[in-house]
Length: 289
Figure (cartoon, rainbow, N blue to C red):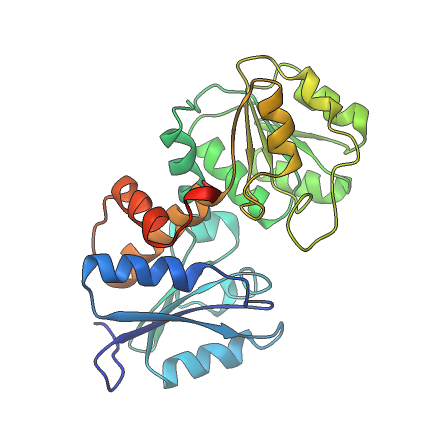
């Protein structure tokens, strides 16, 4: 049953540190208004280490649920009363539904990415994938792609131990190499889909790929995806498009993971593609698609 405030609105929010940059309230409230359902979505700054304290607060204040971004996704896992299949598989939670005093953790990141990928007409089964990075986002993307029959998957990462830990979750389906230019060139050769799961090129990070010439190794049919959505076009995507490659940013994934989270919160079915278009128009995100 939906928890309500005194005003009769189910309370939802996103937690993180930092959280001010989050577009989740903008996106979620646009969807809530479109559906005409009794919820309101805000944001809460919750510092690392305060996850349990926040859960107690959320229950006490009558929240119906919340989304979580860094640094809370992994910390939430052992605190849940129940875990959805993807949250258990990824070892990370980005969506928490509160039912009475019970907290049910889900993860919609992998589903969100896969929906965005298929929307662009990119087939996954049997496709050779190269992932740049081995963090939480890479883990969700990689394991969802493995579920959907992709492979082999090559993980390029600076820290071999981190890449090996990810690959061990799907032994025989994933392998790892380094992040030097020659490694990136090797990963790009004969690759069908290249996905940047690092923060390189993200607004506010002052970090960038030093050399994007590895894109020259990609075959002409390859697609390049960047999970970053700010800026709308990273240098990686700009250079991919200059080479005539299909390229897309992370806005679709951002919207779709929010759609699937709202389905969990409200117990409703949403036409994901129609809602994506509504959110882009209602939130003025067209220039970022």
